[in-house]
Image (spheres, rainbow, N blue to C red):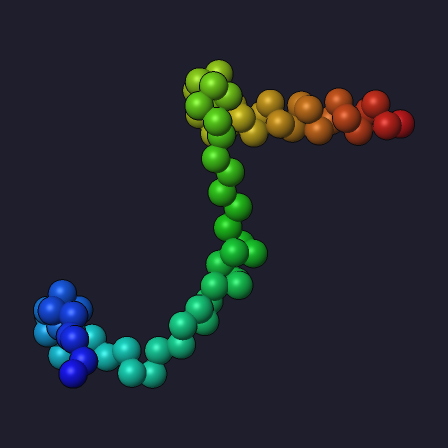
Length: 72
């Protein structure tokens, strides 16, 4: 005899009738989302040196500009 997971059964029973996922496609927008989202997580010691994301972006642009000038 097969054991049933009572937790899964309870979750299934709470699904509202208006939520119909029968035609859903798993991961349909995953690739597009990854291409348009660029999240960077800073280490705590680095994050402590900046007030906000604008300050981080300014610092990174300065580094990129210096690197470009060094290559010329």
